[in-house]
Image (cartoon, rainbow, N blue to C red; front, side, top):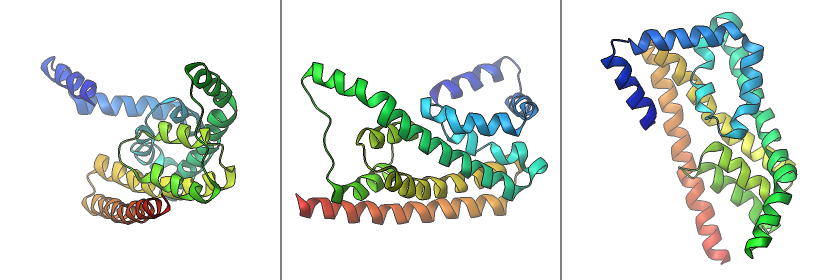
Length: 208
């Protein structure tokens, strides 16, 4: 964020209009086509690319071409593919290397009890701060069942992503009502998440 702010400041001092530059970037991405965009959305977040870079721009980019409903559906489908890919990456491709590294350092991966797996997914997904890619990595390393990981993660991540998709479109096109709706959804999710965190934290405290 700091790099973006500093970069924008440098461009302004050089006489470059950030809005014009932003529109040029959007035009270039749009020229690549929706197939390329959604394929990138399904893969790149697993390697640290911010998911919000896709959710905030997808509707302004392809809403006019594909329609809002189709864009939201394709975006959520791409997120589902990314969740599955991230699970495979951390559970099968990276876990053996992590285990060897920890063993060399004198540690072992913690084992999560079956009754604690649901609570762990919810806590990881709703705790502010950890990046999306790190959340996937941590949950995949626990080797929890794929169905449980996928079901809970898809619901929580999709709800937040839908709010960001609507907000991004409203921000670009100056739609006040849509922006208010997106912010309201985000606030509602945040309040619900707060109660979920408290519930599972109390549950963990009692079990310990």
